[in-house]
Length: 433
Ligand code: HEL
Picture 1 (cartoon, rainbow, N blue to C red):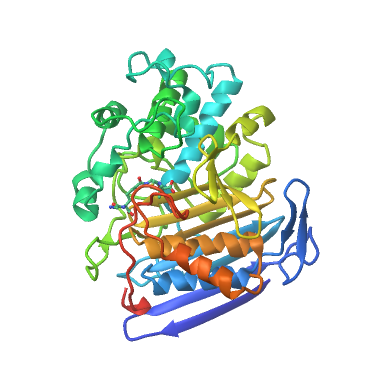
Picture 2 (tube, rainbow, N blue to C red):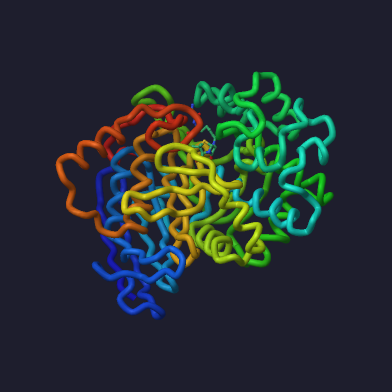
């Protein structure tokens, strides 16, 4: 094992930065600069740039995240990086053993359960939602597939809920919503597209997914996640505890960035996440997320046919596409990765894997509503899957700078030209967080 640890002390706090690597046994040379990993389906993946991942985390910290972690699993080789703190009061260093809220990465869990139910012939993807939940939706043409691919046109009720970030969060952090209350909030607004129309991201779709799971199985989503995913994959750090507000065991605290520049971060760790339920309330770790995505892409959670359904893509911006509960991100080196991003108050997550699932990266910054950090964290994917950046021309540099400074809007993540939630960039001194 190669390990390097740097401890930096300041008047305010000690910041622990660590980078640990377990070299691959299976692939000689994997992880070394310039080496490549042969991936049967994805072609040749460049060797990951581990230092690059670490530098991205350091950047996120400078941009206002109290801490940031990443774990890369690459055919038996494991790399970790961690920067900053899990808890701003105790100054405990953050680590990849910390659990955290994964936000919309939860959507993959919900989609997997529904795809398994489709395989068991308990559900048809092209059947109307109303066949299983009579009278729920105002249009019989909205199908299960439309919901899972964000093409139902159901308005995203969280747009209004979190229009003002901190007051919006405080108003719901202790609330327990029924699925129906959440759907009713959505239905009080006009729909955004016709059924099957263009992609339009909405948490409402995955609230409906949770209702479908509970109706078709007669069990809670917690039981279904547990029996179909968590237990078989032995994900010992993955939980759905709704409506319990605490994260069980060792965890990173999450810090929400207020809309007012310069205002103090808000500790958002404890909340019911009832506003999201099956759209975003799962807790996990970087290790479990990598295990989960490797299993999914490796075909160990669904049949081949169902995995192919999950990867029927609709365009979702210039560098992204959406399948069924699954995002595809097209990286600068031409490689695509598959997974999801998550933004829940206090936590930004990236969890993606290669086409065959043999390389996976999960990363967390323990802040949110900070578009700069969210944008930067995309760099973990670039470093993990594209390796070292090729020398840039002045022109590509200019294009990237234009993209990085493009305005972001509510409720979509960082793809140039897409709508994104994410408040304002903040500049702060890393050690004063
Ligand atoms: S937003 C996303 C991400 N998704 C969607 C979902 C999730 N999270 C939410 O809908 C929460 C939105 C409020 C988050 C809050 C913050 O940053 O903590 N922002 C505000 O309150 C802004 N006023 C599309 C980014 C995804 O990647 O799928 O997770």
